[in-house]
Image 1 (cartoon, rainbow, N blue to C red):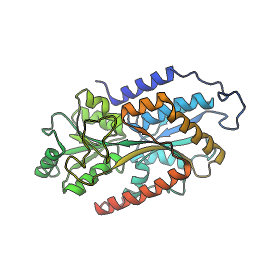
Image 2: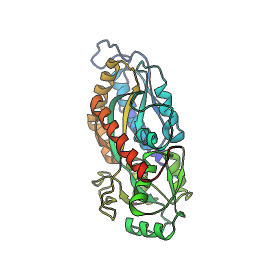
Image 3: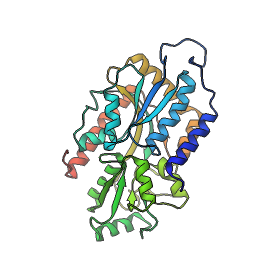
Length: 329
């Protein structure tokens, strides 16, 4: 069975095959102050999800443009908290960075965490904005959001929903739907989106809210049924799938995002180099095509703008968690 992980690896291998790696010097041949050695990109989830896909795509482009290897390291666990904490406690020298996901701000509202999202990280650039998508196993007898909600109301607490972990964007997308529809669905956290998708494909759980990039191929292959995307506008990767708002839950909206961050105190020179290279990478025709085909939209915001966006997200999801009665654990 092909999984989202296999699809991600195939795409990244194709991208890397087209890249002529540098030899420790930037493409214009001039000396540079940063980076002077390999850079580690920590992905706080398992291989196969949208965070991993984005990190690997960027790693290839940054390796080519900055002349040093950018190495992806998956550190899954605790709803992304383990990987986030690794970076928060790393030396702030620019050689360990985080491919952060929406879960960075969501977990701050849901559970006690060993770091402060604003104080302990240095924003570099939001990379992409991604819709989640409500998908169900084909065995579930529903074809629309309204049919799904009706079934969930008839069977409170019986339907099972996988997620990338407690406090992740897929989890809070579920919580928001429950809150707005008066339904109760059993949450089953996995150690990352990739493992959650495997569980869903195998019938261990009935539904999930993965990112569009990590689910689109399984949807197109008929192995999962898409009922609605979580953003206010339809996804470019799944243009025929309605938004959850238009399919029966007016006002519903949840956007997943991924972006680069470093530990607090990271040199401004390194931040600026990585921001510029990230913006160039996401603006390249190859990267834009890969992202948009998968349903991810390039953003490449400046460090200051990314920092303000993170603060706004913290406020939004804290309110959702409070409304749902989810006390910190």
